[in-house]
Image 1 (cartoon, rainbow, N blue to C red):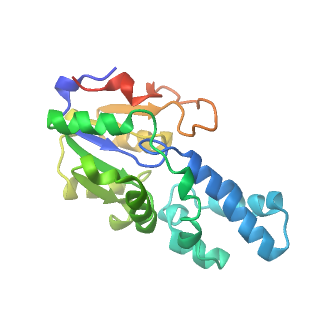
Image 2: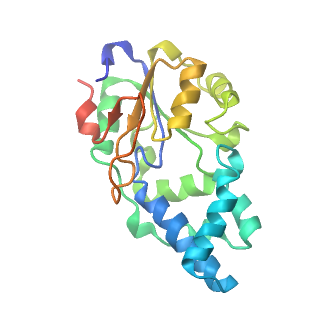
Length: 217
């Protein structure tokens, strides 16, 4: 599935790729609506619908991923609330082993995430995520979401890589599409980002469910 001899750099998403998206889905679809609804006198279903309307209007932008933005909009400390489901944080299957094998192979391994820095810091504190990574790049520091072409140019300026010898693994199809347009040659989707749900449609992209399927030799 992966031509490792042709790859020098691996770019990896965080939520839904290295880490189980179950945590994030539980937060945004259940925990946050519960807190917001209790304050506003709404049922959890009504609160969830209201939050989904607001988030979907900003999909594909940095605001969509910005905890500070949602704290301001919802008048809640979203970053603090985001730490209250720490017990649900977990790695996706064999993700840690995959990172260790890339390190042993000498492959440049970079986390590229749309997550807000507060979310990144929290998840690193809980998972030791950066142990086998060469670098972490937060999209908020580039001024663009990964779905936008500007992100890929700024990323290349910050972290020079040969797109013809680079693999991106991401659970977001819009991000994979943007990377393909920019010229990243090797693209891999995630078949089941949330362990609490079934497989997702990854379109024309090959997908991995367990990183054990693509361990480098």
